[in-house]
Image (cartoon, one colour):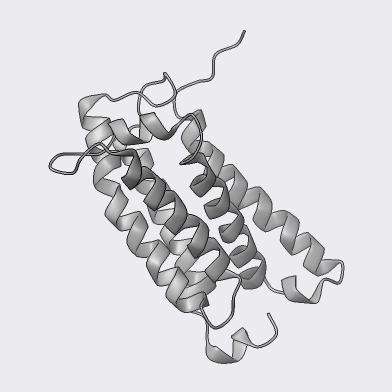
Length: 165
């Protein structure tokens, strides 16, 4: 049995985002009108990534997520389930034109709000899926990349770009 290197599990959302973005943009180039721009393809990829990460909050990883919660918050599975539901709801919102901007702002805020848990896990050496935590500088860059993707695809979108996409 091969063992994954540290940081591989945190790279899965980045993989989902980047590969999804490229595949959806390719579909746009092949004629799928809703994916005819990098922004619309990125929005779909961001939604896919948040569906993926939200779903992991209901998997065997839920206890690892709970261990990352810093004091004074309780290490409660309810909080893990709530954040997972919010990510899934945000993903659906990204794909719903009237809710898109609000969903993007909510997801960006959630990424910022959850960052202290990542910092706590890195500082305290809390393992994730039996592996060492992702180093804080790498985690910070990933969070910034996810925030930038949501910002550009949902929040910074001009109202005229919103029509039919």
